[in-house]
Length: 233
Image 1 (cartoon, rainbow, N blue to C red):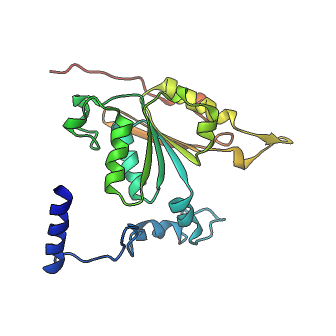
Image 2: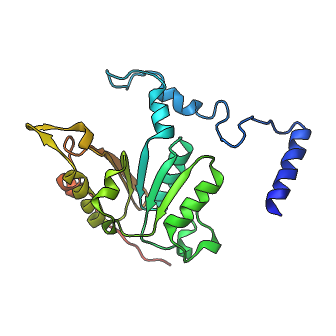
Image 3: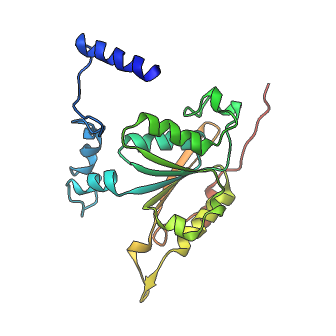
């Protein structure tokens, strides 16, 4: 009933000139869809690396090859998943061990009242897959410690939206264990970048960690602020 109503409404809008057929068929790739991404992937700028060569390769990699893991599907995780999917990433995996509570609904916008009690990762994946063409989000209702080394090796980048120092240290240790050195030189192909983000109250932080090249989580534990709580009235 609902899909049929939507189809009829779309036909009415097209007939009245209130909508335009983009001609994308079932692919979801209408002309101009990725113009916002091309602006920084296909042209140089004042902050680009000296070795950067503008071209279509980066966008092609993003759309067809790049596999991303998002750890956490809470307040920050919902925002991360939405932004990744709308930026062209199609092979997105999300892992979270938590279920949806009614208190989550005011800020975790991928969930609805009917979803209370269900796994966050699964509901988030269903929401995005049903709304964004060609998006294939795979969900895991598990702890990160439940997955083995081969699971994490498949990803090109890992993005964390965690609220636990223990979990951060664990995934940091996993990625550091992947590093391979040959004659004392780090093999770049063994590196999986980690983007770590977090919030505390009205404050937030984000940083990029390149294992073996930049300071890691263990190197900078003192930078994480203590958790603050306040009374609810």
